[in-house]
Length: 237
Ligand code: CA
Image (cartoon, rainbow, N blue to C red):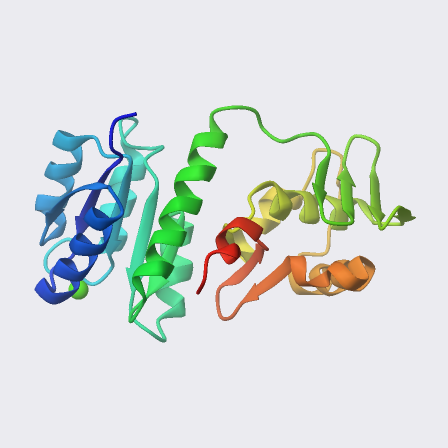
């Protein structure tokens, strides 16, 4: 298999060198650009498997770069991991809203970055396959939307239609962070006439019903929610 190619767009030389070094050591082919315009050109030329994109860039900022990549059919499905500054959750929400797949917050460890990259590449490889409409099994939890059924340690637990959809959306992409704004349209089904838009309330109810498996739904502070990714957390933090 050819080496997976990653484009890094980052203007701070130290951070760029740190990312370059660690990705190359993991066997990725890395190329980099120091501003948004150059980054877009590089992506078009290199056709990478994934982009690591700093948000705070001179000229075109990361949000605009992300928006343009997602607007172009040639790069629409290209996974993007944003690099954000600590305490800038609003940037994260904005970035996820324009289609970024995940993010890391400075300062981050090489292991953290690699784990996020591998998780996103894994999800993107699966995305082409089949939309997971069917049964999902995590530990003692079985989610079966077709039969409108959730079982916890073998026991059927009553879920409302909204709760079931919400759980299924999260569980279909383990490790992916969803903002509340992203969850609402996904949870409103064809059949649903009215749903409570307060995602937090539904999450609270779902966790209660999951009992010992409540940890499966993780809160990402200031951003949203994600389903526990056993594979990503198996790697030492
Ligand atoms: Ca920067």
